[in-house]
Image (cartoon, rainbow, N blue to C red; front, side, top):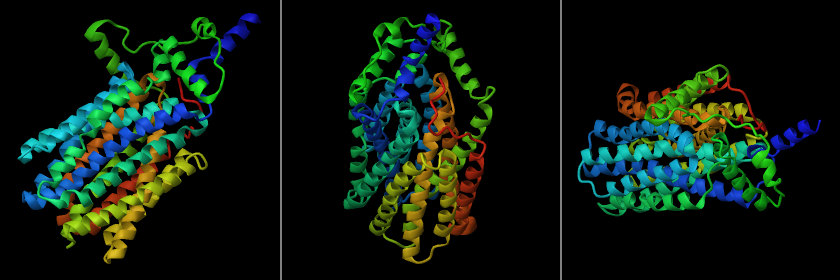
Length: 465
């Protein structure tokens, strides 16, 4: 009986179990805000390109296909970055990859301020996409692995809410900086280089994920991280010997074989695990949802400033309308963050996707100025609330050894849609104008809502180890 008791005590002292029961503390706030600032900088960069495209279309006399490729080439990089970034995060750690990706896209964005041709801008936008695509799924995985189980969904939605902060910053830069001079778009890109500096803060200022360390057998390091969180929460930690010698179960390392061949086989096993028994339906559902939401979101929001200009509004008024529409993202996130722990993940996601579909339809049929703004704000509210819920759901689907890989590959599939959507927008505008375009976006939102239904709801449950 003593042996059984000792084993139970040891298991209860496992770092990941201790994290799940902690109250929210200053240490959690530091992880959330540190990751959120990186997330906001991501959004600022993605948002800036929509305003830059509108400005360059006038200044460089861009053809529609050139403008489309400036938007889409970044998403090609994001698709590659999301798939590779998740694999790297499951090998090297969440914090390491988070910092590297911030550095990559920050430097590439700053260099974009110096370009003199479409070709050079396309090359740099690809590298910006590599960094952005890698960072987003890693950041959501990172926060979810530190969050207490009872508020995990809410914290990930709050993390996603930093996207609205960054997109609003992009709208302000677009409204105040880009129209100010012919070089305004260059100054916008220069401001976008801030993530390169912030990467150093992330690298040295934030802890590595305790769940990742535990899954790699690095229990001492995982315990040290959790002890800092327990100290911040005013909760006593278990005796060090219990954690060190208690015989805790450790997930096997993904790359057990030595050398490059072992690493390659480990990566393939990580991807193959997404289609293993018990998770293949989740993976299929997630991939459909990610594809549909990306198609509609990026197809709409990358083109809204240009669509408003094409509708007869001047550049300043178009950017001003976009800024107003963007501000509705923040209450969308706030409501989703509250509902996700009240209604649950699945119900919240379905409702916000349905609201996105209705809003998209009315935006496409809007005629009066007030209708454009009202429908655009509703689209921002529901669509970004849906994004928050989706980022909360995705990491919960997979166990720790492949959690970042699963989130990364779901995002990568979504990026395929974000590549295609901006390229198809000019074609759909020729076929049926704005009404057809936004009716298609509404249809994709409906399909996403249906695809959510097979997903389970892990509200309040501990993350799978």
